[in-house]
Amino acid sequence: MLTLRPWQSECKTKALDWFKMGNRTFLMDVAPGGGKTKASCAIAKELLESGEIDCVVSIAPRRSVVFQWAEDFQSICGRTMVPITGNDDDLSAYGGADFAITWSALGDASAAIYEMCQDRKVLAICDEHHHAGREAAWGEGADNAFSQAKYTMVLTGTPIRSDGSETVWMDYDGRGKIDHPEDGTYTLSYGEAVDLQYCRPITFHRHEANFTVVFGDGDTTQVSGAVEAPVDSRMRQVPALRRALDFYKLACTPIFDNHGRPCTLSYQATMLEWGIQKLDDLRLEMPESGGLVIAHSIEMAEYMADLLHILEGERPFIVHNQVANAEAKIRAFKTSSNRWLVSVGMVSEGVDIPRLRVLVYLPFARTELAFRQAMGRVVRNNGPDDGTRAYVIMPAHQVFEEHARRVEREMGPKHTAETGAPRTKVCPACSSRCDISARACHECDEEFPIGHSRLKACGECGSPNPFGAKECSACGSSFTQEFSVQLDEALRHGAIVRGMDVDEEEVRLGEKLAPELQRKVLRDGDEFLVNVLRTIPAESYGRLARMMGEIK
Image 1 (cartoon, rainbow, N blue to C red):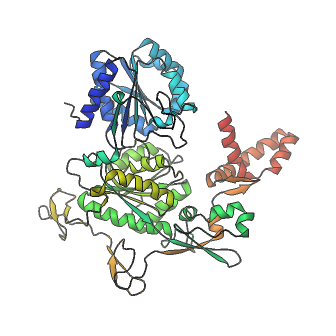
Image 2 (image 1 turned 135 degrees about the horizontal axis):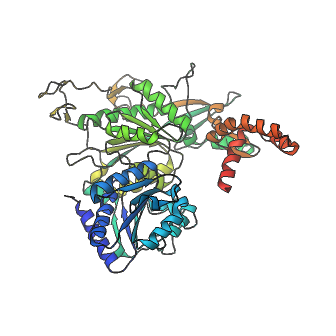
Image 3 (image 1 turned 90 degrees about the vertical axis):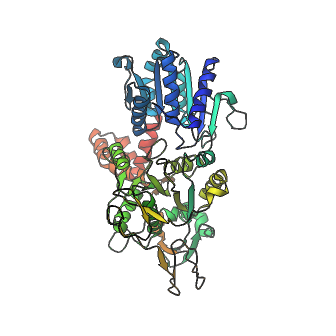
């Protein structure tokens, strides 16, 4: 028998009443991790059983989320939902099936879905609706494909797009805010979800540092999260120099030792050390809990994975768009007890791994939408006895701090305070609760793993201090760490080519494309193209390839 949370039952009743009154679109604005998928499947089940619809099509942002939709729909509705993640314009071959489709695959299938909506009574479930911008290709595709659908249900936890543009099927108030009718909307904020224990409360750790950037001539400049580098004549002449001296840019700059290995004294290493300590504490209460690193590039993901391997002795799972079977690796991590998962753009909206509790955040996007989506990966409740907190470790950057403050205001004072160190711990073998000082379980004699030290010595006086303290309790010395970065290290990610700022992945793509492109042009013998190719550096080929892809 399907058991729903109280909010899910309320939402189901409200949605069914809304549809019975002849309305077409219902909005479910529920915080990430609140349980939107289960609620929408329960609504679909009721509509199917009553004959109001005879087909369900859900749209989701990623392949892994599409497969999760298919599993949940089968479990709740008892019907097969076919995952469509690539080109497929003949949906009739599947008979009377229901479908889960990625946003990217929707374009090729839009005509087939349009015909299906004419022949059948279709409920369209639009997951992560912020993708459906009215002026964007995905939004137009969804609007065209489902224009004849009987009902549409919009699911979101972050309803406002980062670019401020409007989305399909929604009414707006003229100031960029969604103005969908109250009777056709169910809202559950993150703070409410925490109060109801559907989501875990978050502690945000602002990871501070001072960077000393060393120029080629030996001059230095200081940069921190609170103090920008002073603008001098060099920065005015070379705009890329000013960008390189941005605190967040420096926080994302990997530092290597003299042997070419990731430096364990780097800023990123100290972020990971803080995360490791928190994960050790959490695994006393929830032995299977895990950590997630969100990196801004493949290079940084590999760097962070190597650092974790050095610091912990265990190689983390790593997923990005150049890793084979990335979705399978995500599913394997979900059911494993491994400690860390490192991702570039693969573990975001809709990915459900309830055991994740620690997030180390070094992303490309700095928008509040991306921030809240990432936050949603570590707040999911892991069962009725879950009393843990989630932790987000982020650079002490003004933009992230503003996002975090808004989230903390939602939670309210009773959830923003730390709960303190755990007093008991759970045996990973038999789940018995034991005293925090126990070396072995009193029930099964399983030995508890030895965690990392939770004290750190002051560099000035040597006194022990709690891990995470900002200053020494004995002498008052600040624990804000200083890092030295060579200017060429800060500048080396990406390139400036013919006036274009080319990011590191585009540089790598260009270097990969260059040999074959040069061979092809020389083989064809077109003198004009040969001359053009000679004037364009290979580093820019990746940018040009992406531009051509967008044109297509």
